[in-house]
Length: 319
Image (spheres, rainbow, N blue to C red):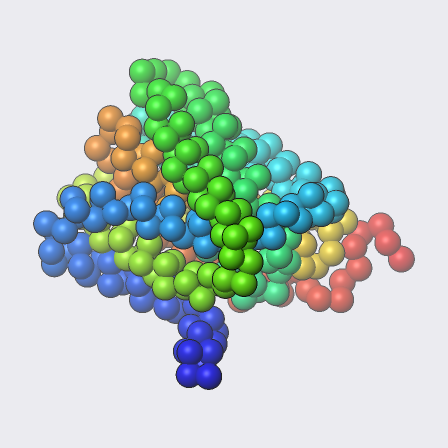
């Protein structure tokens, strides 16, 4: 009972808990900059563990059933891999003269989130189950799309920067192995419930990622400030695009909220290992800056979006 009580408290206060983990990570990285290097080594394992728990929450044998809602799934893919790239192309033009900022900004803004987006979707009354079921597909498509989209949108800025190795490594370590492990656990130990580990793992991931990159962020001085308005503009415009497209697709209210959060929330945690592999010193700090801007924005969005996409509204075109 006590364990359930603690879990209930954690679930009820997830958002402030994650903000607390970020604050602790900033404090740790600022006060003890020497921890950044060993913590960088831990980034991939903690993210892989987080994705294992995330994928375990998906009934993998029933993924075919999740594809039955083709309207939601196709709209989700269209938002993240058609609408978002067009939006990102437009808002990153001010960075065209600074490729060391443009490339990591493209890397993170083109990757849809697959972890804490589920939390924010649930808090705002969105269809978290639909979004959760789509996470393996979103992960796979983005790992295949990023090596194409980033050079396409960056142009000459990526010459010689992108090689298949980091993406292949991420595909294996952060998608295939966690997905295989989740499937094996579901098959061999069907009674195991890993969901209680989600919040502690998310806290650990945020703490590890932020503290490992805080010295870099602080060492960049004002360089990263140019990214802040781009990240804020993305959050605002992607949210608006999600609302408009969900109405055009005639999605119900929970699905519309899930779609909007998916379009507005980015996969900064998972693309960080890719940023670390780039020969651009500022790239990891640029990615973590997006995390900080986004999570602060999410605190507002979970309160605002339910007012923008209200329960009880009729999908357009229906009477």
